[in-house]
Image (cartoon, rainbow, N blue to C red; front, side, top):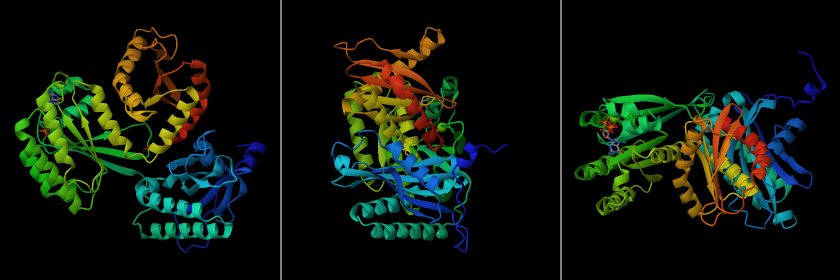
Length: 487
Ligand SMILES: Nc1nc2c(ncn2[C@@H]2O[C@H](COP(=O)(O)OP(=O)(O)OP(=O)(O)O)[C@@H](O)[C@H]2O)c(=O)[nH]1
Ligand SMILES: [Mg+2]
């Protein structure tokens, strides 16, 4: 390969520090602040981090998150925190970054944008996913200290302490250099609750639903949100018949151990077995507590078929179940969904919500949607992948969010239908005015690298397709990085 000038200008990969006895996974730690010179690496380690790499880190972490008016309206600095993973392919590193604001009366908007970024070799990024919770806590703590201590030398001590804490932490880990993040998702609930049908439904294997037989033991399958992802996602569909249930409860250290997410299914039509079902739920929770496992839990109040929506009896049952679920489960993060195989969207909503809990970048995604919404005057945005999994949503108000969830599936179907019949001149469809003629919905296909994604926008005021087209390139460019680190 010939060396061009351009090549020489590229930042050099950071060399491993020689001081440590054993190679440590942490390659660099950088505090960047947006000051009068723009994004600047203020405090960094290793001390010989070259200038260009430092600048690159500061620019990328700050500019991705800083919309032109994200924080300049003098609003408080508390709500503006984002945490996520970003790739730096030029220097072969991956960074876990925490974006926050430092109050400063002299600054524009009375605050300075800042990031703390921890960097490791790009081949080791699993480390971030595996240790997200802990890393988030110590980075958040450091950010608070930085906010409260203005002097450079005080901040140097704070950043030094962060680095030491990180290194101590990695030394305690058995294998910080593992190569793929393993994600384990469980589907649990009584027999006949609809677990296997749910999976078929998500995957649009409708013909299989009809043929589906009770699950014997466990059926394991894999999930791919994107063709290339950093994690291997295994879904364990646990047979709910008595003998299988007893087995996984007895061998909880095998089945319930090391789980990242659990779906629990309740057949709300089977009134006679609701208590049995709640009993199983409580039993599983108590075993999880024994194992010190606290995965997020999605409860599917299943078989809530469209023709039952008006039933008072079912409605009352749902309330009772919801109350029971909430009781004794305050140590868990639990979210309830009403689902039925006759409404694909209900399945996708519950499933996507669960998956999003596994993505360290869900806040960064939402931030990108929020910025795009602002630039295009949209009131709500939804981003779907090719399989219809909801990657992220943003809505200004609860109402536009709710409304949007209801109409989204219809537009998706419309788009598909028009596409199939080759009736599309553009890669989008727009509704004509709704209500007072000003409200509009747009469903648009966007290509982000090799991925086809779908964007649904809800606009309350005016529709300016040019504004959308104009802001799309930057939006798509920012999404590329986030997709590479989505899961
Ligand atoms: N009405 C209705 N029936 C459903 C729904 N989901 C599943 N079923 C039916 O419920 C029955 C059981 O579904 P499965 O998916 O096999 O249940 P399961 O939870 O996997 O059962 P096990 O494998 O024995 O644990 C089948 O006859 C499905 O067709 C739903 O949303 N509404
Ligand atoms: Mg099954």
